[in-house]
Image (cartoon, rainbow, N blue to C red; front, side, top):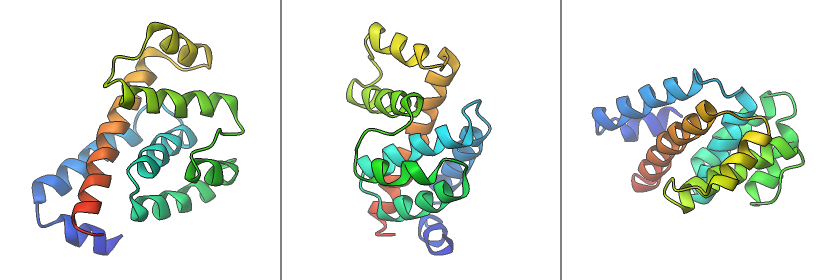
Length: 140
């Protein structure tokens, strides 16, 4: 992690922007496991090896997180239906540039998430897209 921060510190604006956005995402109403599902979905989609490794470690520390690791890394359905709805919603937000069809928003909400959570997913996508792209750019 220290090496990554050193590489990103070439642009203090980039590093501080990521750290501030990450802090906001961590304070969202999404629970820790849900946040990690969003992060790993982005990390795997963007093939950020350092993020995948780091967040695999975080998943191991969260109750029920270990069972999510392999499916997330392999882009497979999660064993928990609610978290799978979150993973699918995250991918749809990206694929549609936010223009998620109403029925898919309703599916997300039926899984127990809220409009606020949907916007927090967008925050997570933005935060970890920034991180994954920067990490790949500097060859972290």
